Image (cartoon, rainbow, N blue to C red; front, side, top):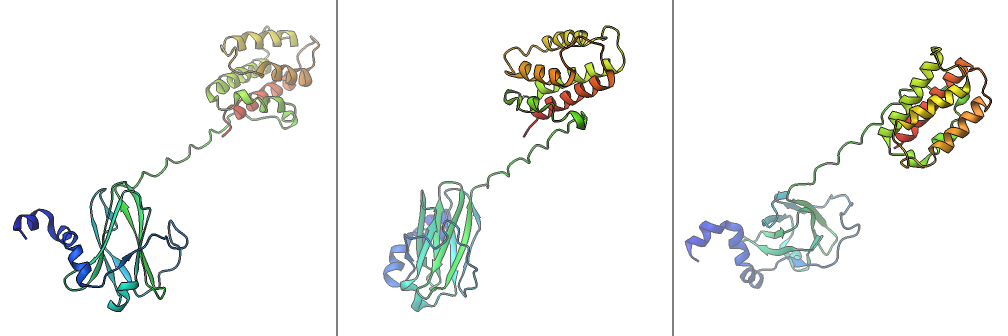
Length: 264
C-alpha cells in the first residue's frame, strides 16, 4: 500500500479498504435489517457484558469507528449489527488485525442514529451517534401577558358575550387599544367628566372613541357583543348615569376584551 494513502486517510480508511480481506479471513459481525424491539430508540436496560465504544458525535459524512467490546470470538458469526434510521447511511462491520471487532458507521443526514449489536443468546449493546449539530432547543414559551384590568365580580357573567368574540382572539394589539378605550371611558365616568351625564351621552362617547380605532371589518361580532352587554347591564333608557355602577361595568368590559385578545 502506498504511504500517501496512509498519510491522507489514516487508520479508519485503511480499515475500510481492507474489509473484504478481513471478512474472508476472520469471523465478523453480520448486518441485520430488522430493528430491535422499541425502535427507533431501544429502551431496555443495558446490563450486558458487551459494550460499544466510540465517538458519540461526528460530522455528516464522517466515519465513526465503533469498537465492540466483550464479544467472544465464537459469537461473532451469529452476532447482528442493527442501525436506525438507515436512509443515506453506511454500516460496515469488520475486525482489526488483532481480532477486535468494530463497526464503521457514516450518515450523510444530520440527526440521531442508533447502532446496536445483538448476540444470538440475547446480549445486547447500543450507542446513539449524533451526526452533525443537534437542533437548537425550542424557544421557551412566551409567558402570558398579565391582564392589567380588574373585573367587578358581579359583572363577569354579563360580559361573557365579549369573551366569546372569536375574531378578537390572537389580536393582542387591537384588544389592548379597545380595552384602553373602555378603561379611559370608565375613568371619565367615575370622575364626572362634563358631557357624560346620561346613558345617551355615554353611547355617543363610546361610538366616537371606537370609530377612531379603525377596526371596521377587523373584529366581526364586536359591535353586537358590546351592544348586548351594555343593554343588559345599563339598560336602554336615556337616564342619568349611575357612575359607580357604570364605571365598574366598563372596566369589566375592558378586562374581557383584553382577556379575549390575549388568549393563548
